[in-house]
Image (cartoon, rainbow, N blue to C red):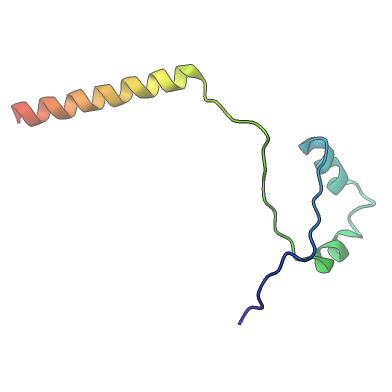
Length: 81
């Protein structure tokens, strides 16, 4: 049976960029210390984003055309089939 998880202690770390984070964890002096950091905390990685991702308009229009094409093919097959 797992003990109940509590949020009594929480650490939030924000790096300027993914590249900075990757440079940190790939640095040779970090490697010997990494196992101790992971043993010390129970790690839950939750990706967060501050922005909304809007897909390219060409993909939306193309997807709309594909849906219309498939719908017309289905209707044609249903009516003539």
